[in-house]
Length: 300
Image (tube, rainbow, N blue to C red; front, top):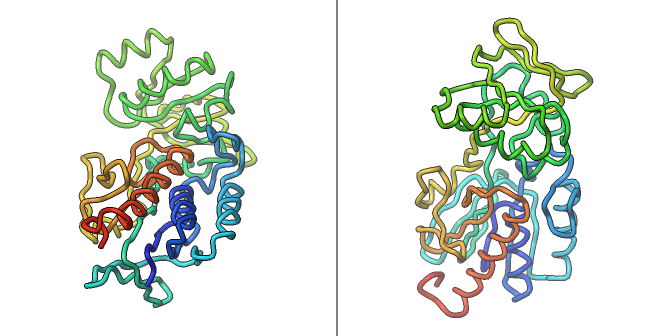
């Protein structure tokens, strides 16, 4: 019987495991190594690690758990989670069942991209991005196209305006409001509303947007409004409450509405940065350990 099984071994899960390992809690990390940022060349805004490839960050995290003998890491996909009299049964895809007193979900989200031909081909390393904080600096002074509904384009344009003066919007979805149009006009950002036919590129790098009316907008980078979706159904299946925006509701220490179940990382917050995910894992690990020591009503 483990004290905690952590489902997901990216920034949030590994960070929580580090906290718990340092208190000699028996921890099992189940990870099937499909992080959201797998296609990214580097992780940014991470104090002391800015620009480190995501896979390297995770490898460092796993290596830094080695001194803590009560922490185990398994390459495994969790397919079901059920509450029992003494805690939880956690079943993995190979049929194994593991028991724990508590569970931390750190399964992350996946990005649902607009259905535009060619867009997914250049996602991440090919020049299609969604986060100005993650990738804006790397495309500074370049020709950038923004793709999304009016709200998305009007939100992205001011964020990127300090990095380049060459920004073009391409509408995909609901049109902008009068206020959003005024924002774009003040920034000098033209907005094409004629529909997108395809995204084009050369040698794996995006080169432009072809509109349905035949016009072509050359660019070196695209920022698009993606829709984060829960990567795993486990939180919903175990009875966690969700916010109106589709994130798992948690308190400041990662506790969910489901008894003995915690959540951390992108699945439980709209603020999607690697360092933020790691910080939420730290908080959840602290919350679990606190409940073990001081608050039996939260964790048994």
